[in-house]
Image (cartoon, rainbow, N blue to C red; front, side, top):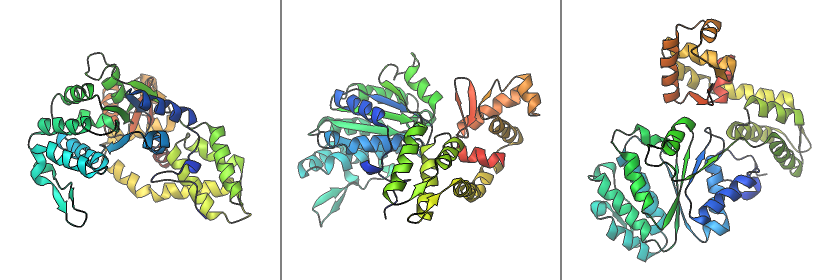
Length: 372
């Protein structure tokens, strides 16, 4: 029996929950040639939505789709390495002619290509150190995109990471190439709303007004309830509506944690058996315990002011006016200046997020652990 609650990897269409309005809108953007910005907290389904749209026959058959995750990158060289590999795999794999075009066009790293004697094809064998002139290599990569035999749709995930690169004028460099690229449209997805907003909504920044904004929100509870009930039922099992409500409220609609919870519940529930609230509560408790070491390690790297602020915001859920005297006294914090400094660091570390003046712990499971 296949578990319908997918946590990692691509999701089959029959196991994809809702997102009908979002997927239709994104595919309209793709086919119209517009660039799109997708913003949502981590693990809410941005990547799954993009994959779902890429796999749709109307997109898959008519376009070359390329996906690049730059979350772990820390320099322009690394971005170029990943983008170059993705373009090589996405375009070059289409035909021998396109493969040769890419090898011929990427002159600055041409000597680093390998060769597969079995398949009689070049292989992408470059290393970061082979990119000696990033700007020139980037120009070559975009030249390959322009020569593709189909229009390309390129998704760059966790795009806000570029603001952390040490090189100057990264946004201007990328914007110039993207602006003059007639053979591709781009999807920029990110999980840091304030940074993505600064990149695309600040009139002084190169990417201002260059893409349509799309804010991805949690799947509605009634839609997720229907999804869980349906997949339990068709597999000869049942689930308590209150159990789904409990999980949804606990994780505030976070897709990843909901899927993980009901993946376990589905596996534990036999044919003609019922999953109830007590079972869901135990699964969540075990998930929290399993991550205790990881969260303890995270806290060990914070100073006292950062730890105290993290606990304070976890208690409030959505904390406002965190530098006010009332908030500081309520949680026995040090001072407004220490709170301000701590909040900036916690946001940089990805532990806090802020939206419309409210601060909250980015990871719902971590917040649950902090409150225990």
